[in-house]
Length: 399
Length: 74
Image 1: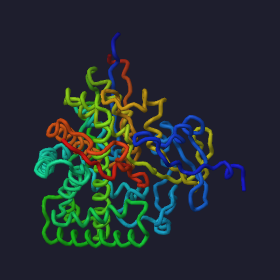
Image 2: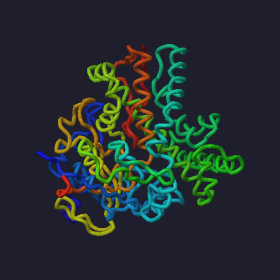
Image 3: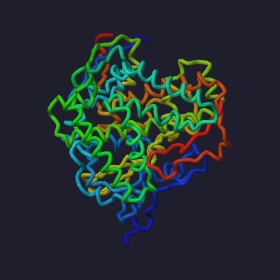
Image 4: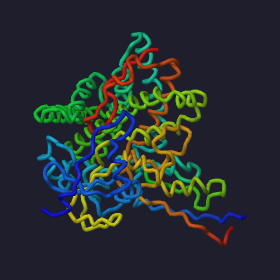
């Protein structure tokens, strides 16, 4: 085999503590920010760890998001499904012009203005969850009672998913996002969620209401298959991500009491605190992933056409050449420019919704329970170490 | 020191509607109700907003905002 193959690293896993990325990532960022990496199927591609290289690749049209061109840097049971083009509507795994067509149908629904209009409803949903927690009394699992249901209810509301159906949906998506799930369980969960959305599209066609999915249905530009897949994509993307930010973010604030005290003392810090938590926690731990469409040189390394690059957002967001004292959580420092929502054409469509949810939910939680604290020692909090979206499995709390 | 005037241009064909500009400089940028793409409210914004406008240019994920100095009109 060639020399470069012999040098290829494996995707780094394993954290020294819940808030510190694998140490190998920091060493790579310093020494080889664009490094040869072996993928589990034997192919060799790249791992990119510096802020500048991650950002430039995300903005570069010579790097594709097409599903059939990608590879996954960790053992992945659905690899066979990956090797064909994305299903209609699944635009996160497409390039322009297909991606553009779908995204344009959705962007008007996710503007800053529309997300701010949702704030009172998010406030109500959060209030209801806090009331339920208070009524049940401590200890409670914050993930189950707060972090998971709030974004789930918000995105269900946006899409127009009946409240009675959301429990089924939550169970199915949890299976999909767990890297430890058996292949047959994942296939079954995919089928369940797909059937769920097919029914929902039918319902919206019969009885259109004032929600996103009804708007897309009555717009008449999308097939039922596309509508179902877009619904699936938005619900999955809007649910598990914000849920993990709320759970892990609460854990981080409880473990950094001086930061929490600063936020309590000055509520106007909430917006910046959200940005800093997004940067510091960088919950997307595997990917984004792209494939080179032609030979491209990045930081002196030649990435050949067809090779797959895994971009480490968590390494990029801790790059000392971009952020001052990056391993410190500082809710008063400048955090904008982080890559947690990505960059380029695929930058998160729902990011303004996520911001409003977090800016609403964190202060309300700490207002309601001023002496919120862990109900177990910090080292007993179980982390989602093997999941593509990082976070806490549960967060037992008292008040 | 007199600050030069800024001239802002936007490209709705490149815009992906992420909303970063509206979040960063809401007095200069808005989003269309129809497709969420950028609407330029002020192509020569006042000096007080220059820092925000430049930040919006840097943060724009699709490179749809261009800001250049207009030395003649300071």
